[in-house]
Length: 193
Image (cartoon, rainbow, N blue to C red):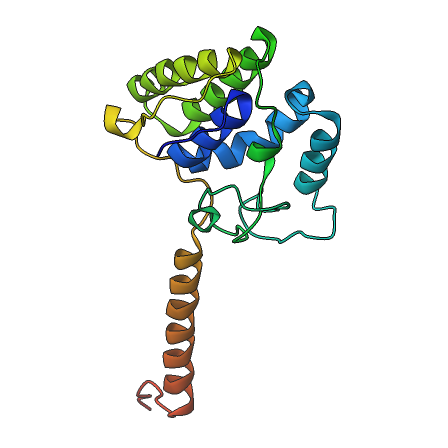
């Protein structure tokens, strides 16, 4: 992954690629708690997207799955429920320098979600990588071409994957079908009289 975008935008694109589950959890919170990370127009678009407003939105089972705008080169098909040619909250964020207040709030949000899903040593590693990337975002630089995965932090998966839902539905249909077949075949337990 080689993200060229800078500032909070670059950081969020990095987080979206590195930890998509954590990104899906914190993106709505970032738009809500750190609106100054967005220009006025882009902030309103981001908030509208998070609330499912606007004319070019798609729904899904993963929370933040509403997209708008034009493609920035990030593969949104890797994000469940995502549209194929649209930008999301990450691309609505500012690409210039940022304040310590903004990056501190984002660090706290990411750390809190990480603490729910990861072991302490993994959270510590994620926080260290996250701090480096946020320092670069604060300075208006692009994120480093690094991944927390290579440092022993697994990707967090939040919610149910579409494949799991499909497999579960098929399994349920098979069980119901077999039960119905057994019932209709007239198989009854032997009754001794």
